[in-house]
Image 1 (tube, rainbow, N blue to C red):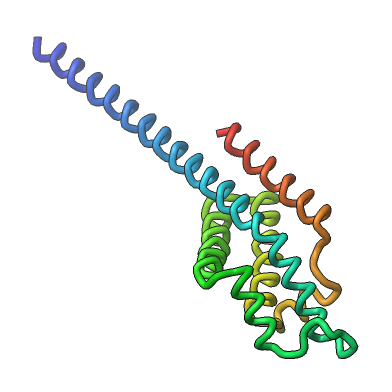
Image 2 (cartoon, helix red, strand yellow):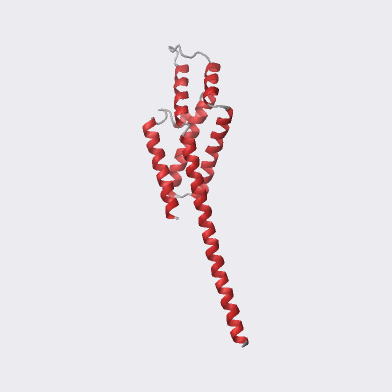
Length: 170
């Protein structure tokens, strides 16, 4: 009788350990899926600002053009920027940029991580440029300008599809 009790107890412990292992594995998968969904949402939300960035870029180029009569002072640009992007919007954009970097570095690997970080880099350079009316980072890394709408949205859709694919594989 003692041997059967011991075998039963060991069996119960083994079953419990297997259940804990599977539960832990499922929890990790659920966390990863949740973080990938958060990454998708943040990438999409930040992408909505691209049109405003592009428009403000046009104002900055006009400001820098000495032959332009559109805008002559930096304060005129700042007024336009503040109408297009409130301080709250700028804070939210900075939050999105940080979140993308953290989520990409912690929860992605390989080509997906590279795409996420490249996207974050472009959007950081663009945000820095339009927030401040100029950017050394932009001048060093995007000397030839930023991607056109079609190119940007193609890259954005590709990135979102890859995140969704990763979520579906989990």
